[in-house]
Length: 460
Image 1 (cartoon, rainbow, N blue to C red):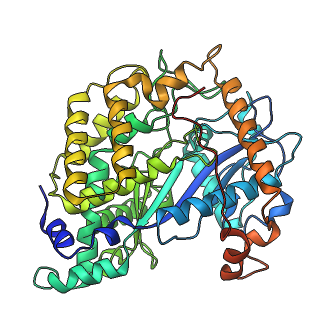
Image 2: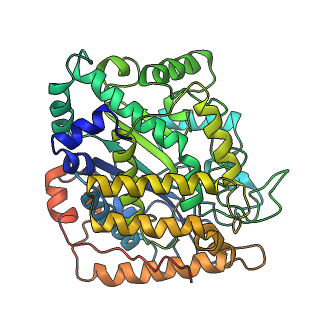
């Protein structure tokens, strides 16, 4: 079951280093008014100039807020930083009107889509947006979600390279091989993440055009037909293949740049796309998670714990990737995304088999009680689809809408955040990085015992 790298990690007692992957979180949420429509208010003035803001900014639309944490040494630190930014954004909202929409599919859109206001960005980015809109329906820009950026501790790569010099010429080649294993695993099992964490069963008025599912599904956002995806599919065979495919697509005009590739994973290098394979990948960006409406920050601690477990599992076990894996994975995910929300997935046998393998892996490696508990909870979601987020959200639908539920959740989270903010230091203007250094910002904002709200897994 364990591959060469896995056996080496176990033999050299590197499990703890492997589990504490470096992490950054990006969470998009729409600002809405209490009637379930996009806000007409600008980016909060108290947060400074969003074009220069490193951590809180607008995405495509002026109502579409994005929180970006600094890179953290571990997941607990990343969650704390995200909570601090979430609370800071909430403290800056118009208290009488605005809330943060907790669902990935957008709130009620205006009938006249031309009234949707694009974010106030730099001239270069504005030109990119105009070009994008000339080729895409603006509705495809409005789904939101959670992105998880993952990288390995240099100490792990260096320790492994010391034993694998005969197989890998440079640390960069070893690092690419490590990332390849993780990317292959997440691409192949994306359908399982869609089943376990999909939370986009329907959407609100004025989103659909010609077609729509005739039943609530698991995740419209995760579907190619209804989510944010480019026709260009990329190539996840290797870091080198990914780089070559993206550069060719840019050269041919299929996409404007690598940011227009809306695949489930993006591979990233600090030095840019060209030459990435030679220099070595720096991190990967998982883009496959819907907002979780049971958490005030859009993602639960247990979900991050599961993602960390998958990174460890994919890294340490033998890969099953072949020439047909990417196409098969896309087909499986599309099927799961559009299955009826309360149904048993057609891949339940495969899901149960994989969860059994994860349980065996956790026992063999000796991971924590929290990891074991998380795995047991998610195992129950596979056994009983009624406990999935999408199925529970279906029960909240009233008159083909989730507005009432979403606004109740949004108000609860807003009230809880404002209450906690009363006993915390909130530095708003300094968040844009224009007035303080990164170190000073960490001291005054992130280094506090922030708490986010997680309601029970059962939606209510």
